[in-house]
Length: 334
Image 1 (tube, rainbow, N blue to C red):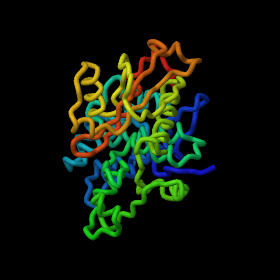
Image 2 (image 1 turned 90 degrees about the vertical axis):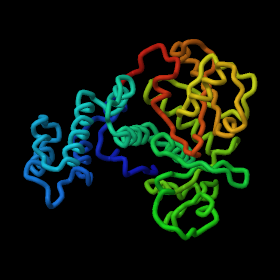
Image 3 (image 1 turned 90 degrees about the horizontal axis):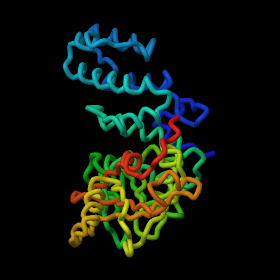
Image 4 (image 1 turned 60 degrees about the horizontal axis):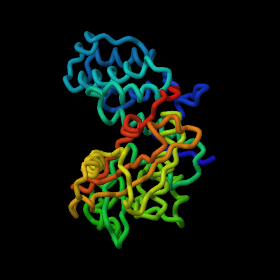
């Protein structure tokens, strides 16, 4: 079986009987290796002592006084944020349950990076056994912002962090067109090169074609199906639509802030101007599986809007699928 996304740390977790990821000591200790928390040579004794104590016992209670004793202000803030995040994870048996707690009860000042990392590892779990690289690449949208551009009639999404690297001299027309640095090797995923994804999945350097009717959108639809089933315990079928015709917006979910704004405008009966229409990346129809119809408010369709901002950035919000769908019954929390 093909492995992927090794950087998310899924090898450091175990699954419980329900398939959720257990909050293991090994997973928690990875955060102690981050450069923000690993004491530098000039770190004070209080910081070194705290770091060593948590390496020995990652679940050890940390009092506010221990963090306040750290001399460096930036280090104090880093430790405060990490311990607060850890303390939100520990009461839950699984990472899935912890993420649902963040979604439903508020993330506070938890760094978005930490939440994206949770989505990363949870999605890796949900996609276990998936052998379609288009689905896995599309799932990157859930936790990595994308820059979108239109080129030769194709709507392409490339990883923003890769694009934002350093360098000036473009190496290829695609690099030049996307504004990529010289050291970023970006290829558009096609049927011919898709299998290359498995050896470079942690580089996030393959652009995805999100043009209507192509495999990028069908891959994203499949990733949404996996996410909803894994997190809410209900089966859904998701279909990309080529156009919005005879759509009953009795229920809709924006997959990002712009998609929510567009859905709200259409629900109010407003007409979209050309600029707003141009920001629509995709429209999906979601239908609950027959066996799970009781999960929905009714048996009607739910529509999902995906759009880029005026800055051509696509910032997917996977939490919207967990809070916005008309699910009646409580999910089978792992």
